[in-house]
Amino acid sequence: MSARESYRTTGFVLRALSYGESDLIITFYSSELGKFKGIAKGAKRSKKRFANVFEPFSLTNIIYTRKSRDMLAFIESCEIIDHYDAVRRDLEKTLIASYFIDLTDHFSPEGKRNEKIFELLQTFLALLCTQKASDAMVRFFEMRLLKAAGFEPSLDQCIICKTPVTNGNAYYFHAQEGGIKCAGCAEPQRHDQSISAGTVRTLLLGKEMDTDKIKLIALSDSLALESRNVLVGFISHILSREVKSLKVMEQVRKLCL
Ligand SMILES: [Zn+2]
Image (cartoon, rainbow, N blue to C red):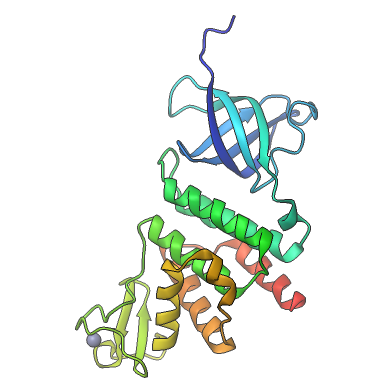
């Protein structure tokens, strides 16, 4: 008899790393545990025990044992709840899902529970299954993830004079200060990132709106580019790095469109 108690949790697979000849180290994002790592002994050999479960963004039921919270869990069994086949059949959607998973990974410290992030992943993966991939979907995921992770950019008013955003006015986004400044306060330099009131309003709307309605939002080319540059620039600033899967996703999306 095993002296250790088994636990059960639900989690998305963030990534799987080959370890030794036959084992895999899996990083999950669980509703109860946040990001956590476990070792699946013999996973590369035992196809029966762990058939296809460790593919990125699969939602799984995990049974594990663990000596203490800061130790690697031992994965006893893992079953697929949702494999998101409709996403996997479509290259563009697969790359978007991979980007969502990468962002979640980068913004999540290990062992910190955040149910909002778990729900966000669940909602947007389900959305990707049923709706056409769009710029709005990607940008609104970024907005919501930033908010859930505690890095929401300040977009509803100028961070200096506190004047609310007004249509037709020019604004500048300052990643280091995490918000926008009006033209009067910004003293814009050449490299400053300009952002129109329309882009600001769209991002604010996307942060809160009912996800079923996202399909109704089509971003114009200029709005798509501006919101992409502001959010991707802000995310790189916070993480002090570029998110690799973003580039792959963008290159392939260009080819698909
Ligand atoms: Zn101002």
